[in-house]
Length: 261
Image (tube, rainbow, N blue to C red; front, side, top):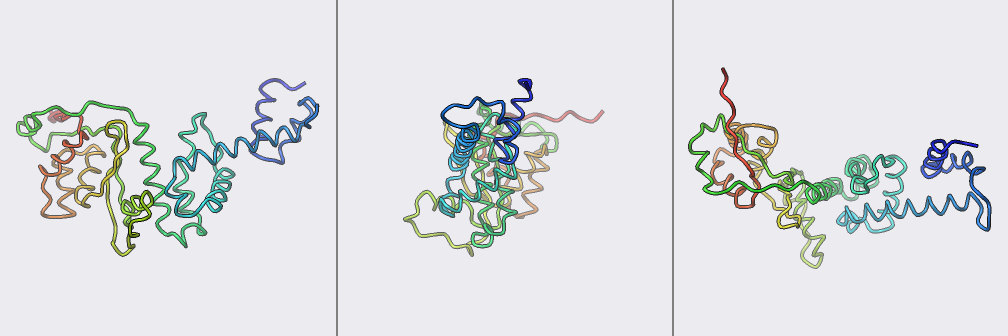
């Protein structure tokens, strides 16, 4: 008689791979429904649950390719990326990269992987920890500390994205397809994704602002981030960009960096 651990491993293998089911069949009681049929019921239920999880996380991808094609992608994704977490919220983490490596999806819809990436960032933003925004007066610390020593801590839900396609416009269009479809020649887009009042929000931003946010996310000082913004646009204005982040509650703290001894 196999041990409980062996039974659990055998069942997991049977759920992931049909040709591994035989090893556990003798340990399953018979009855009106045979052992193989019972395993098939479980396997189909798991596949349906994973499909629904991907559909809930990537509704714009589903809208762009249609249900039959999306289901084929989901089956292949499941075969190549078995879940290693008990939390279904983690299941789609590699779906954008999977789409990017799927020529049959990318060739007809070249921006599909970027849309999937945007939707996964929205999932991360929805589930991120909360934090209290930095209080006003907002400039009391920044005026008193050399920007070469001052760091800004961003809200845990904040994510940023840069794409060669107008992905934020496309994403909005997927929600309201009656509106005119965006044109791919509208060019690249950068944007922010975050959680506000319990809802996920997103907005397109200038590439200089995106570079600024990415520098802050990488641990850079305000001076480092301002230099990153100016590298994209010599007219970049540090205070305007910071005001936009503060107005959205996306900066939770300012911290002076210790001086070198």
